[in-house]
Image (cartoon, rainbow, N blue to C red):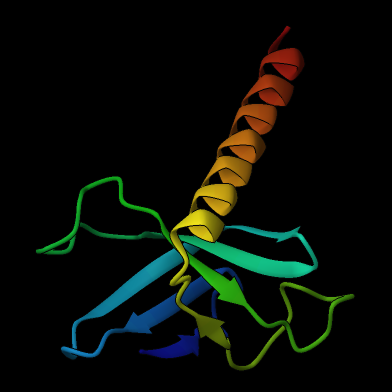
Length: 108
């Protein structure tokens, strides 16, 4: 899988899978967990072969840990271990729920 950062839109990543399917994604989260970083991305448009609300989660290797969203190229790695993936997915869900709660507080 090739990964390319779109410099015009800081939070957009283009994923190219082994079968040459290219998916442009918005970066929805970059977060640490157990001394590793992860990136969650959501396709900008519906892509044949993928669920409509699918979120891609990969292990992320930042160029600079002090500037997680600043990079020229994105180095990602698939999460092969099911237990690790479950932990990461649970953490992402917690992040989304926390953000939703924060948004609700701001609306009050």
